[in-house]
Image (cartoon, rainbow, N blue to C red; front, side, top):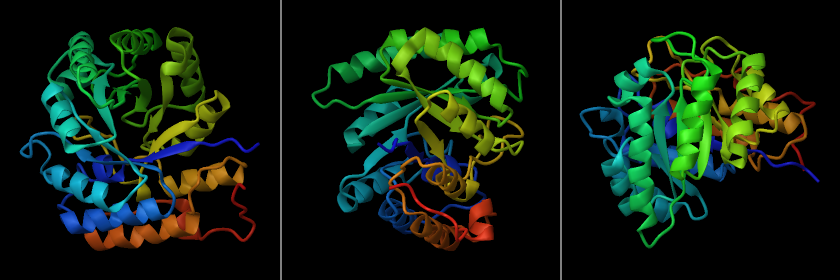
Amino acid sequence: MTTFVSICEVGPRDGLQIAKTRMATEAKVRWIQAIAAAGVREIEVGSFVPPRVIPQLADTPEVVAQVLASVPGLVVQALAPNLRGVQNAYHAGVHKISIPVSVSDGHSMANLNRTPAQSIEMMREIMAWLGAQPRKVPVVAGCSTAFGCSIDGVVPVAKTVALAKGLADAGVDQIMLADTVGYAHPAQIKEVVRATRDAIGGKLYGLHLHDTCGLGIANALAGLEEGIRAFDSCLAGLGGCPYAPGASGNVVTEDLVFMLESMGFATGIDLPKLIDARRLLHEGLPAEPMHGQVPKAGIPRTFRAAA
C-alpha cells in the first residue's frame, strides 16, 4: 500500500508576508484555486494579524470567505498569533488554525513580544476558549527556530523539546518543528525529531522547512526517514520571516512533490498542474523571484507519479 504524505501549501501566508508588493485579493484567490485544483488538500491562506503589522495579508478575511465559498473539500488554514487572532479566525470559518511560538528567546520577543513560557500560558488560554466553542477547530503549533536562530544562535535540543512538551500539555492538537531560518542539516533534523517524538509521541505532526542554506529538500528526506509524513512548503520557494534576519524562502513545493512522488510516496498532487500554478503567482507578483529546480529543468521523462 502506498504511503501518503501530506503537504500544506503555505505560500499565500508565509510566501507573501515579506513580498515587496501586495498581491491583489482576486489574484490570491485565483492562485489558491489553482493550487487546490492541482490536488493540494490543505492551504494556509493568510494570517489574522493587524493589517499594520503585515499589510500584505490585510485581506485575509476576504480571502478566507472567497476560498471557503469556491473551493469545496479544501482544508482552509490560517495563522493567528494570539487569542484575538484565533477568535477572528474561528469566526471567519477556517478549518484549522496555526499558532506560532518560538523556541529561542530572541526570536520569541522579536516576533511575538513574549517569552516561550508566556507562549505556553497563552496557548492554555486559547485552547480553553476553543474548547468552549460549538465547532471543533484543530490547532497546530509551529515551534519556530527549533533548529537554530539568527538572533540567539545555537538552540539546544532540550529547549526545543521542553517547549514542545509544554505545548502538548497545554492541549494543542498537532506540533510542527520549524526551521525558520533554514540553518538545519539532516543529522540535526533526525536528532531533534527523535528527541521530540520521545517526549510528545504522536502530537509531533510534521516539519516546516526553509531553504536558506540549500538543504531544505535534504532535510525533508531526513524527516521522512524518521517517519515524518507532513510538511509545509511554498510554491516557487517564496517566503521568509520579517523578524528572523537572514531567513530566506521555504522549501519549494514543486521540488518536494517531485522527490516524494519519485520515491513512491503519494501526495495526491498533479505535478504538471502545480507547476502551471506558478504562472498565476508570477502574474500577481511579477517582481518576486521564483525558485525551484524541477520547474526550471522540466519534469524528467522518467518521472512516474505514485499510484
